[in-house]
Length: 389
Image 1 (cartoon, rainbow, N blue to C red):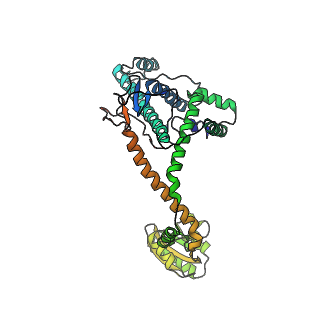
Image 2: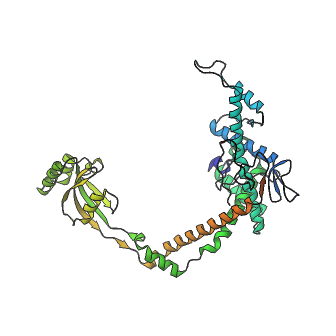
Image 3: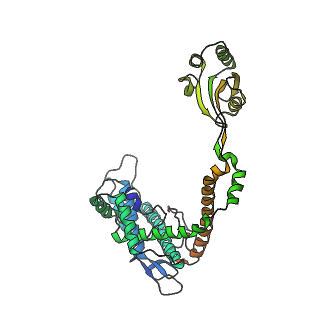
């Protein structure tokens, strides 16, 4: 699993923040001055955003230079981005290659702004997502104990970092604290419990439903007819006629394939193609293979690749599973469909519900999770996010 398990965006698509960085607000509406967004009575603080932007930047820095010594990255600071511009300027070579000119401060500022917007667009939606999930869990009476969180954390830690030294190295280089990781595990666990509750009632499948699905999809349950064939592929019909005559005259398929065939996949093994099922080959060749009687030599068959001569040598009849044999597979398939349908409906309602309770401050209201979402004046590089359990 490696450090990827605890990268900024978890496998569940949820960014979570330390509980000390998400505060409860007291008012019924409006975003507090020290916050960037408010989800019901939970405020996403500027401190939380700064904290996780540093983590995101640290992760990007580590990916860009694996194995390099960890250094705390500097986050571009709006609106002037003075420090970012100065850092970019300082990192440039003193002497530029011939024909190149140094970028202006205006150009560097735009680059810094894009970097900042990209980090903000990655972090803020995930912080909101964490608030949505913890809020939904509370509404549904779902909780997770500290003991559960610790057990889950220790399991993940053991899988990713069997050696304590490796874990400490990751922790130091990631920018995250142990508290951050524990809270991430807590929210991921809440997310999974919500999923389990939503899909629990969708696992019931009646015998009638199984029977109806089987009757409509019999072809899916069993093994289709298979044929082993000898074949030769030539560029012209004349060559194919000569190959066919040679086989009919008693020459072996191995010698004929070696002399005439252009099909490199079968030429080396005597022109043998095994386990062919309908629909795998060129349409004309497929029709010839499955219409010919066993051991009949047919062709030339014109295809987009050239001319084939073929001979089916073994025919394995199709085997169709009975309803009783297919029942476990059908049941599992229908359970999966039912769970996905229930989850899709829940996600739609979940997003609608929580977006209506999410207000963002000016400058952060371009996030799709905000009920007061505003279109950005200019396109910025943001990371798509998932706001579902």
